[in-house]
Image 1 (cartoon, helix red, strand yellow):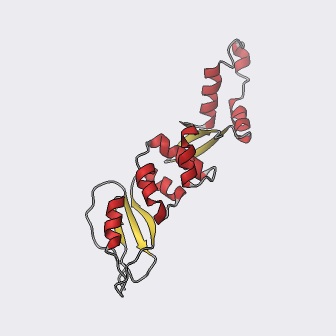
Image 2: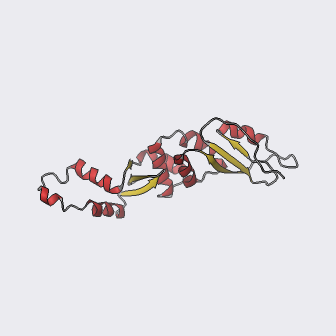
Length: 181
Protein backbone atom coordinates (compact mmCIF):
# COMPACT_ATOMS: atom_id res chain seq x y z
CA UNK A 1 0.00 0.00 0.00
CA UNK A 2 1.69 3.18 -1.21
CA UNK A 3 -0.17 6.45 -0.72
CA UNK A 4 2.85 8.68 -1.38
CA UNK A 5 2.06 10.96 -4.31
CA UNK A 6 4.39 10.83 -7.28
CA UNK A 7 6.69 13.82 -7.74
CA UNK A 8 5.32 16.19 -10.37
CA UNK A 9 6.28 19.46 -11.95
CA UNK A 10 3.25 21.61 -12.62
CA UNK A 11 2.79 25.15 -13.81
CA UNK A 12 2.76 27.82 -11.09
CA UNK A 13 -0.61 28.66 -9.62
CA UNK A 14 -3.14 26.70 -7.67
CA UNK A 15 -2.15 23.12 -6.98
CA UNK A 16 -4.74 20.71 -5.65
CA UNK A 17 -4.37 17.29 -4.07
CA UNK A 18 -6.83 14.46 -4.59
CA UNK A 19 -6.56 11.84 -1.88
CA UNK A 20 -8.43 8.65 -2.80
CA UNK A 21 -11.02 7.31 -0.39
CA UNK A 22 -9.60 3.86 -1.17
CA UNK A 23 -6.45 3.48 1.00
CA UNK A 24 -4.85 1.15 -1.56
CA UNK A 25 -4.77 3.80 -4.30
CA UNK A 26 -2.28 6.55 -4.94
CA UNK A 27 -3.04 10.21 -4.37
CA UNK A 28 -2.56 12.70 -7.19
CA UNK A 29 -1.69 16.36 -7.53
CA UNK A 30 -3.43 18.36 -10.25
CA UNK A 31 -3.57 21.93 -11.48
CA UNK A 32 -6.79 22.10 -13.49
CA UNK A 33 -9.90 20.11 -14.30
CA UNK A 34 -8.46 18.35 -17.39
CA UNK A 35 -5.36 17.43 -15.40
CA UNK A 36 -7.58 15.98 -12.66
CA UNK A 37 -9.58 13.84 -15.09
CA UNK A 38 -6.43 12.60 -16.84
CA UNK A 39 -4.71 11.62 -13.60
CA UNK A 40 -7.78 10.08 -11.99
CA UNK A 41 -8.47 7.97 -15.09
CA UNK A 42 -5.15 6.21 -14.42
CA UNK A 43 -5.77 5.75 -10.70
CA UNK A 44 -6.22 2.10 -9.68
CA UNK A 45 -6.19 0.21 -6.41
CA UNK A 46 -4.01 -2.87 -5.75
CA UNK A 47 -6.56 -5.07 -7.55
CA UNK A 48 -6.53 -2.90 -10.69
CA UNK A 49 -10.00 -1.52 -10.01
CA UNK A 50 -10.53 2.12 -11.02
CA UNK A 51 -10.77 4.53 -8.09
CA UNK A 52 -13.34 7.27 -8.50
CA UNK A 53 -13.89 8.81 -5.06
CA UNK A 54 -11.43 11.42 -3.83
CA UNK A 55 -11.18 13.93 -1.04
CA UNK A 56 -9.91 17.30 -2.28
CA UNK A 57 -7.33 19.53 -0.63
CA UNK A 58 -5.82 22.81 -1.75
CA UNK A 59 -2.12 22.09 -1.60
CA UNK A 60 -0.62 25.32 -2.91
CA UNK A 61 -2.31 28.57 -3.83
CA UNK A 62 -2.75 32.18 -2.83
CA UNK A 63 -3.92 33.23 0.63
CA UNK A 64 -7.18 34.34 -0.98
CA UNK A 65 -7.79 30.95 -2.61
CA UNK A 66 -6.76 29.07 0.54
CA UNK A 67 -9.22 30.96 2.72
CA UNK A 68 -11.98 30.66 0.14
CA UNK A 69 -11.29 26.93 -0.34
CA UNK A 70 -11.56 26.39 3.41
CA UNK A 71 -14.87 28.27 3.59
CA UNK A 72 -16.38 26.44 0.61
CA UNK A 73 -14.82 23.06 1.42
CA UNK A 74 -15.49 21.79 -2.11
CA UNK A 75 -16.03 18.14 -2.83
CA UNK A 76 -15.04 16.24 -5.94
CA UNK A 77 -18.41 17.19 -7.41
CA UNK A 78 -17.61 20.89 -6.98
CA UNK A 79 -14.35 20.83 -8.94
CA UNK A 80 -15.85 21.99 -12.24
CA UNK A 81 -17.58 24.85 -10.41
CA UNK A 82 -14.30 25.76 -8.70
CA UNK A 83 -12.31 25.92 -11.92
CA UNK A 84 -15.00 27.44 -14.14
CA UNK A 85 -16.83 29.83 -11.81
CA UNK A 86 -14.68 30.49 -8.74
CA UNK A 87 -11.04 30.52 -9.79
CA UNK A 88 -11.46 33.27 -12.43
CA UNK A 89 -13.12 35.66 -9.93
CA UNK A 90 -11.22 38.74 -8.87
CA UNK A 91 -10.48 39.69 -5.27
CA UNK A 92 -13.83 41.42 -4.68
CA UNK A 93 -15.77 38.53 -6.24
CA UNK A 94 -13.94 36.03 -4.06
CA UNK A 95 -14.55 38.19 -0.98
CA UNK A 96 -18.29 38.34 -1.81
CA UNK A 97 -18.41 34.57 -2.32
CA UNK A 98 -16.55 34.01 0.94
CA UNK A 99 -19.04 36.20 2.84
CA UNK A 100 -22.09 34.57 1.29
CA UNK A 101 -20.85 31.06 2.07
CA UNK A 102 -19.07 31.68 5.37
CA UNK A 103 -21.31 34.32 6.96
CA UNK A 104 -24.73 33.69 5.45
CA UNK A 105 -24.33 29.92 5.05
CA UNK A 106 -25.38 29.75 1.40
CA UNK A 107 -24.33 26.73 -0.63
CA UNK A 108 -21.66 27.32 -3.26
CA UNK A 109 -24.17 27.17 -6.13
CA UNK A 110 -26.66 29.51 -4.43
CA UNK A 111 -23.90 31.96 -3.48
CA UNK A 112 -22.66 32.07 -7.07
CA UNK A 113 -26.23 32.62 -8.31
CA UNK A 114 -26.89 35.60 -6.00
CA UNK A 115 -23.37 37.02 -5.96
CA UNK A 116 -24.20 39.84 -8.36
CA UNK A 117 -26.59 41.23 -5.72
CA UNK A 118 -23.91 41.23 -3.02
CA UNK A 119 -21.91 44.39 -2.49
CA UNK A 120 -18.60 44.09 -0.68
CA UNK A 121 -16.34 46.93 0.27
CA UNK A 122 -12.79 46.87 1.46
CA UNK A 123 -12.65 48.40 4.94
CA UNK A 124 -14.30 48.17 8.33
CA UNK A 125 -17.99 48.70 8.98
CA UNK A 126 -17.15 52.05 10.56
CA UNK A 127 -15.31 53.10 7.38
CA UNK A 128 -18.37 52.07 5.39
CA UNK A 129 -20.73 54.02 7.64
CA UNK A 130 -18.54 57.14 7.38
CA UNK A 131 -18.68 56.81 3.56
CA UNK A 132 -22.48 56.45 3.72
CA UNK A 133 -22.91 59.47 5.97
CA UNK A 134 -20.61 61.65 3.90
CA UNK A 135 -21.91 60.34 0.55
CA UNK A 136 -25.57 60.83 1.45
CA UNK A 137 -24.89 64.19 3.06
CA UNK A 138 -26.62 63.15 6.28
CA UNK A 139 -24.64 65.67 8.29
CA UNK A 140 -24.80 68.52 5.78
CA UNK A 141 -26.20 71.64 7.35
CA UNK A 142 -25.37 70.42 10.83
CA UNK A 143 -23.12 72.83 12.74
CA UNK A 144 -19.52 71.63 13.00
CA UNK A 145 -19.56 71.55 16.81
CA UNK A 146 -22.57 69.17 16.73
CA UNK A 147 -20.97 66.87 14.12
CA UNK A 148 -18.41 65.85 16.73
CA UNK A 149 -21.23 64.18 18.67
CA UNK A 150 -22.30 61.88 15.83
CA UNK A 151 -21.23 58.40 16.90
CA UNK A 152 -20.38 56.49 13.75
CA UNK A 153 -19.28 53.42 15.72
CA UNK A 154 -22.69 53.11 17.39
CA UNK A 155 -24.43 53.69 14.07
CA UNK A 156 -22.25 50.98 12.48
CA UNK A 157 -23.12 48.61 15.32
CA UNK A 158 -26.84 49.35 14.86
CA UNK A 159 -26.56 48.67 11.13
CA UNK A 160 -24.88 45.34 11.86
CA UNK A 161 -27.52 44.38 14.44
CA UNK A 162 -30.26 45.29 11.95
CA UNK A 163 -28.58 43.12 9.31
CA UNK A 164 -27.94 46.04 6.95
CA UNK A 165 -24.19 45.45 6.83
CA UNK A 166 -21.82 42.79 8.05
CA UNK A 167 -18.11 43.09 8.78
CA UNK A 168 -15.75 40.20 8.14
CA UNK A 169 -12.08 39.38 7.68
CA UNK A 170 -10.89 37.82 4.47
CA UNK A 171 -7.34 37.34 3.23
CA UNK A 172 -5.96 39.39 6.11
CA UNK A 173 -8.14 42.44 5.43
CA UNK A 174 -11.33 43.96 6.83
CA UNK A 175 -14.35 43.86 4.53
CA UNK A 176 -17.99 44.94 4.70
CA UNK A 177 -20.90 43.13 3.07
CA UNK A 178 -24.12 45.02 2.41
CA UNK A 179 -27.40 43.25 3.07
CA UNK A 180 -28.17 40.52 0.57
CA UNK A 181 -31.85 40.43 -0.34
